[in-house]
Length: 154
Image (cartoon, rainbow, N blue to C red; front, side):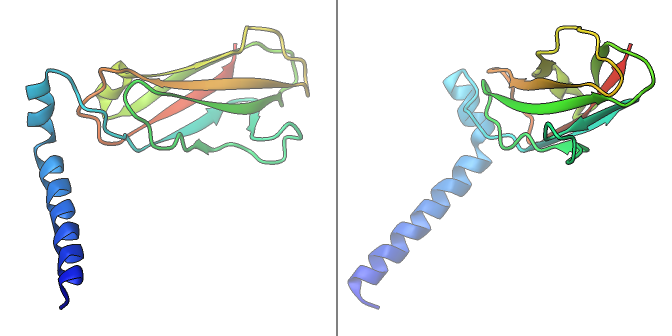
């Protein structure tokens, strides 16, 4: 091998070794610094709705069954816009809850809110709603998470 190839190979191996070392000693490094290091958190969420249709588009052609929130970092937030149609036979207002958090402690660091203000939705009407998922700056020890969100008429 030529000297240049050896240097490239050696540099690459050094970077791999540093990455592996950082991954293995992440908790110790975080504790030594006195604060958590930012580490991306993969995730997923599912959407359930009773008497209501939840869609990605205003034409209500593409229904939402789950939401991929992407890769999140502590201290970040992500917005997703959905359209909710009243598919029942009476005007309704809506409520949203979350459940089945995995791991169970992730609900202490991650929250889901929406900008729905409680207006009445008539039969067949559709409203645009922005969902916001926030991750606390203090989130640590969560490698991956999932939860269910339920939107229902009240």
